[in-house]
Image (cartoon, rainbow, N blue to C red; front, side, top):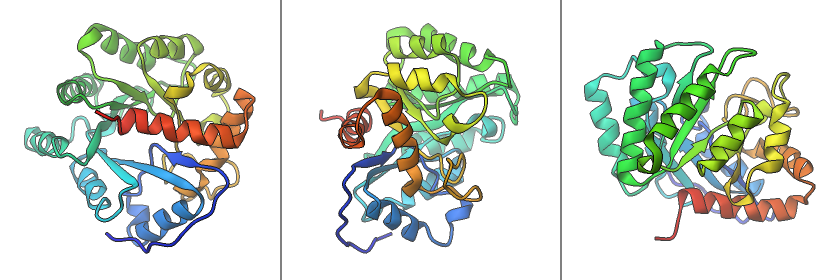
Length: 274
């Protein structure tokens, strides 16, 4: 895919560290959606896969677009659906130079679309692959309302790996403050999405304030988790500014300062200078 090059003039720099422009809802206009994000000031976009087909679509979006990155991996919802042959394809793609991370993977004890034992097996193989390649693992983590079992299980898995584990990104943060502090202590980057505006996610405000600036990210999780002011039917990368403004308010800083820090944190996490 080659996008039309046109200059953009935005006063605030932005990133979207997690957006599924590879989803079916963007099948007809992914190019236009990315161009709209660029015009809105989004300088970096990461498109993660969640299974073999979506990982292939993520990679296809990279052609001729140097500011878009891709990740490949298997989501907990698909943990029981991707067989050994499919995983071998993911492993092969993960070794490609243009793949900057492994994922989206993780644990989902809320909807449990794959049995928990399969989720754990899948998480471990994604983490091992990320560690082997020295690339960050992008981690989804959800528990049912009022619970924290997935967060505790994820933390236990990462703690057990110790120094042999990969760098990690906690995508679309959700969970208690002590869980966030433990993840920060492990060196994790933490990303905030439109989920922060939903009832039951009030702790995210405290977490946004204590996350180290060089490990602070924002995202849309498009087409999901639309923030206030974005269409509920299809969130898009251009709307990441709404969540970024929320983060800036929580940290008592300007959007200009935060924007520079977000781009730096993105590059530190996904595009380190070797």
